[in-house]
Amino acid sequence: MIDFDAHLAPYAAHSSKSRGRLHPEPAAGSRSEFQRDRDRIIHSTAFRRLEYKTQVFLNHEGDLFRTRLTHSIEVAQIARTLARSLRLNEDLVEAVSLAHDLGHTPFGHVGQDVLNECMKDHGGFEHNLQSLRVVDELEEHYGAFDGLNLTFETREGILKHCSPNNARQLGELGQRFIDKKQPSLEAQLANLADEIAYNNHDIDDGLRSGLLSMKQMEEVELFARLHRQVVQQYPGLPGRRELYETIRLMITAMTADLVETSAALLAETAPKSIDDVRESPPLIRFSPKMREETTALKRFLYANLYRHYKVNRMRVKASRIVRELFEAFMTDPVLLPFDYQVTPGDTLKQARKIADYIAGMTDRYAIREHKRIFSLDEL
Ligand code: MG
Image (cartoon, rainbow, N blue to C red; front, side, top):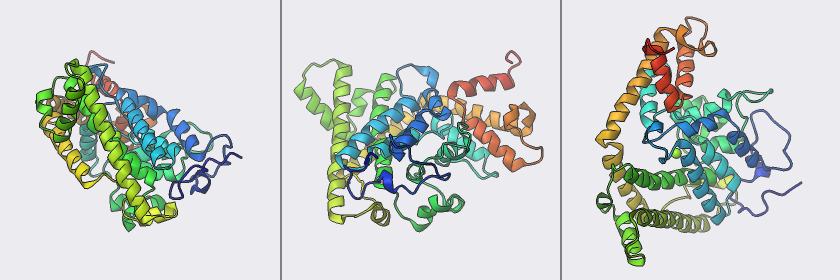
């Protein structure tokens, strides 16, 4: 039997001590429990759809922008680097990172907001909870169970936030939101790796799309400081390389800060096990200064990119598509593929099925489906 945990710190998530799966399965032997989770995620249907789902830009706007698939891979890369530095479980952070966006609707956040509004009398819609629903129930791959039957630790990492109401329905997994306790360090880490990834790649995509300019970026203190460093080191570097060098330094600055701050906190708190971690305050953190700088960056991106009028136009169009699809299916469930129709009269169940159907759509599928429902020229 391979010892998958030999190199890990005592406070890491150990494969041999996993709280297990909802449906018990014999150990894989050649892979740790979390490697196995990661592999199931990669082979899932929802994972493949990430390629055609977007966060800021629509999938068809350009071939070079991030999609949820490339975003998730970047998150996993950053998270693994951080995990190795802190002797945490790389397999677990990878599994959590690759699964963290599986429940996202088409069209990024606007899709989730509209679907949540549409579902307000039917239990609401929350993408984070939907990611869990995908891996626990919706994937149809195995003979013995619905979903992917992942370990408690991977599921815990996927569920980043949760309302007390929803938490009460989730049993053991929801308990920490009621008790206000922390998840594993790996879950905390994947969450911050997500932030590092999107803050940096959105600068890149924002500039590439022409919605942001280098001059504007100088308003962001962290960017301006590292950009100056690049210009000094490589005078006259062509624009794109100058930008990549700056982003590279930003990712390095953020990851180095996170490792240093968290390592000091871990040394001071000295948790002896993952259970100690769950009882402690968050131990994976940025320094106060870096937290301030990343908050300023986020604020800048919100005002100048996420609320750029060209992005707004797309958001409004996307929200119309999601709303009209939901309303059409609710009014006439017979328009739905047979798999998504329930016994007439069960409104709650029908609404959830429609939310599952819409949430599972890629951007381009949603656009096509909207045409099929509303245009006489399409079938
Ligand atoms: Mg993300």
